[in-house]
Length: 478
Image 1: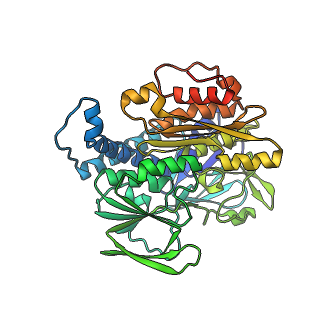
Image 2: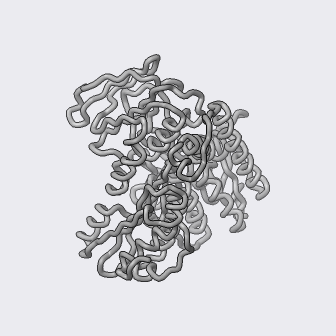
Image 3: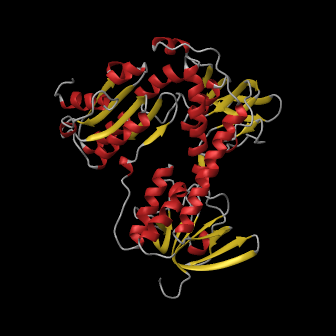
């Protein structure tokens, strides 16, 4: 342990990023403390990834079992399919409790000191922690800030947690209102529209921008809309801003034209989920004591995860995860935590954001890694290379045909000159698992000419990518 300090490393925030950093730091021989004001596991374990996936798993089973046409093609016939909302909610809560306990126990086994309370830096290498028993001060050679993020609630929207709520409340599944408005068509909005429609709710999806799923590759967004939205009980309103939302029975939503900001429609619905993104938790962290100014709430960092003040690194202070705004994904936070620890230990490590995949766990799933085609073409213009893309379809894949799940496509984006893989986007069965092969390829900066000769198991869904790589390389598909 570093002489003169209580700890080698103190971490503020015990989410996926902080937890990953703590485990890696212990493996590097550091004495570690982790400080958490809320539940161990942060957003991902308690209010995000884990409970939402548990709900999606249950709702997905209900959707599949009620799809009589699909079952009939497989030679299966069922009677009525019922579900218990409370039992589905309990399923999610049980998994959250188990994983939170596992996370806490893993830190105990590694002799990481866990301190419950609100931590904030109080000058160089010092933290003040507000606990139930009063203030506590600790010192550490290095400090990592990993406080995470909270749902963003735009001005004019009033939250009551019952009739108007964010994903934090939605994962509890305390009710299934007949008609739910969802503000936003990103990952969160899509996943909850999947859950709610499977369980019999009607949805009105409201998107301020001029197209649904604006962050997705255009081709994927178009197909996803055709499969995930059009055939389901989902009404869409695009280019519409939820200017004012008032909780109650009914919930009153005043919709304005996004461009003119003038009210054009008033909706009355049973409930409203606000899924308009997330904002960093960066207030009351004592950043001013280090001369750090946030940018739109985000803590500025360099490629090594060092916190910046006036453009220069602050010694022994690091920030990872959602709070730095680099990439707001749980697995990205974990990677950042490991990178920060590596740099603390004197081993240079930077994050390759291009190779970090993301997924929406709808039915079917959406995943991607790297650039969208418009972004790749923009880079090509700047750097002087041409971009090409190819698509393959699940309807030609033997495994997808056998499963009777043929909706889907894989899109591969690459440089025409070198064949370097720039982006892969998948919509279809198990897309979240399939994307990892592409992520690893981008991490290695592989060319489609190399990837075209990789051998894939037959018959598997992975052959959708195999065929795409072969088409891109011009070697012919099989």
